[in-house]
Amino acid sequence: MKKEIKVFIGMGSNIEPFNNIKNACILINEKIKILKISTFYRTEPIGGVIQPDFINGTVEAETDLTPEVLKNILLEIEKKLGRKRVPDKYSARTIDLDILLFGDIVIKNGFLEIPDPDIYRRYFLAYTLNELEPELILPDFGRSISSVCAEFKNVFFKPEIGFTAELKDLLK
Image (cartoon, rainbow, N blue to C red):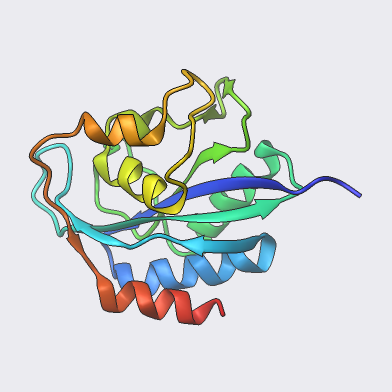
């Protein structure tokens, strides 16, 4: 029997976000066990393109899959939920699923980069990781997630309390 590894998956959407995030959680939970769900937040789009706000959050799960197999499962879920890959990485999307952390594994190849480098650039990733695991030490640089959060200044994001509660109830 393989050992279960703790993973963190970031997710976001700005096309029917409440539907797509809810469906993504259901589909992920069918493949691996979701343990915890962070607060989901309304955030402004990045990249200067005028489009709807995003809803972003993180789930903590455990799996005995490899990072590559999990990545392929997440790509399949994105496709199932209508994600269309376009050259503009800041475009609107039905769902975006990213492996933020996979145990204490560090991977950097053409297919995967774990820890996800956006943890250091996107406050909502750092904050939601901190919420789920405040004692977390990032395996790439050995930094605490709380120290990463402390570097973000003047950030604003609105918690979606009702939606978060609905997601947590869904997985009980």
